[in-house]
Amino acid sequence: MKLFGKSEKQEGFFSKLKAAVASTKNELVAKIEDVVKGKKVIDAELLDDLEAVLIGADIGVQTSSEILEKIRGQVSRKLVNDPEQLRALIRAELRQIIDAGNQATVSPLADGLRVLMVVGVNGVGKTTTIGKLASLHTQEGKKVLVCAADTFRAAAIEQLEVWGERAGVSVVRQKTGADPSAVLFDAIVAAKSRAIDILIVDTAGRLHTKNNLMTELEKMKRIAGREIAGAPHEVLLIIDATTGQNGLVQAREFTRTAGVTGIVLTKLDGTAKGGIVIPISRELKIPICYVGVGEKVDDLVEFSAEQFIESLFESE
Ligand SMILES: Nc1nc2c(ncn2[C@@H]2O[C@H](COP(=O)(O)OP(=O)(O)O)[C@@H](O)[C@H]2O)c(=O)[nH]1
Ligand SMILES: [Mg+2]
Image 1 (cartoon, protein in one colour):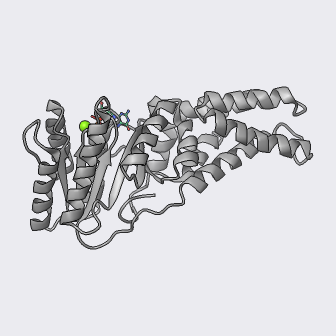
Image 2 (tube, rainbow, N blue to C red):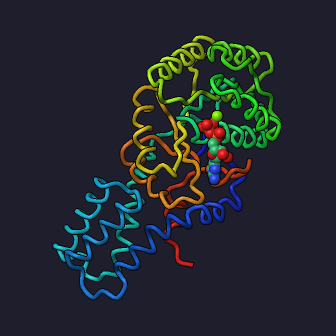
Image 3 (cartoon, rainbow, N blue to C red):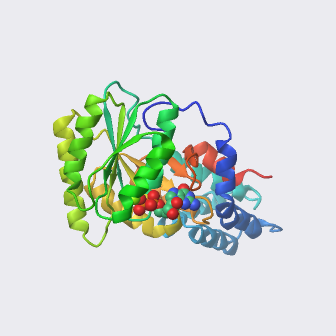
């Protein structure tokens, strides 16, 4: 799924996704295969081992036990008896959970200025993802402007400017320590006068002043809404896949207070914790729009439940 319209440029992205989930595949699918291999009957021990594999792959205790309850039911009703069938059963269960959690639709491309706010704690990949999104939308012919409203960290504004250059888009900034809402206001004025299609807003992510952060985000949303009807049109929460279950804890906080409409899961490359897609889908019910699969500008893949599951479960 992708914000603001359909992508035409997903060629080669499936192979990027496959490369990115290789470690998760080892942690999840290869271990399922190990547990099942050579077994003649499905017994309690085998099912317990499978449950442990799911939990170990960051699918979460509750979700894993629910999946196994379903499978135990099918086994006891004699609907399944061959251990070889378990891999396919788990695949289908995981696919179903991801599908159910990604039903909500993000707004289609509409005329006029659209405001996209990007939120999440420090270091999850907000600024990097903004660079990637700016590039993606520019390549699709949209006029993009970026707003440097993370004024808290000295390096944040410079980092965003580097990404702006890379993506070929301007960045509206003030000095470090400026009021983020004032920067946003400037950016909205600039976006209106330059006939911008998408204004992407970087925000601070400091957690130790959580209440202040949420108040600040609220204020920014209010200002956006006052200046442009319906803004912000999307609030994108960035979650770092390498943090596993911790990412989910942060996500709960942001979805409760920041009105999140979409998720980007970053750093899927090089982590074995990609199974976190499952509890995110199951619990948050907010669409995962993209996954980050590297540090380069093109390392952003539109999320698809089908491709995600396929990349994990397909045999080489
Ligand atoms: N491997 C990898 N690294 C990423 C990805 N996204 C971001 N990063 C890295 O994560 C670090 C923090 O990113 P940054 O955008 O500064 O996070 P922010 O504090 O949320 O703005 C940087 O070193 C990025 O290069 C990704 O998808 N894959
Ligand atoms: Mg940043």
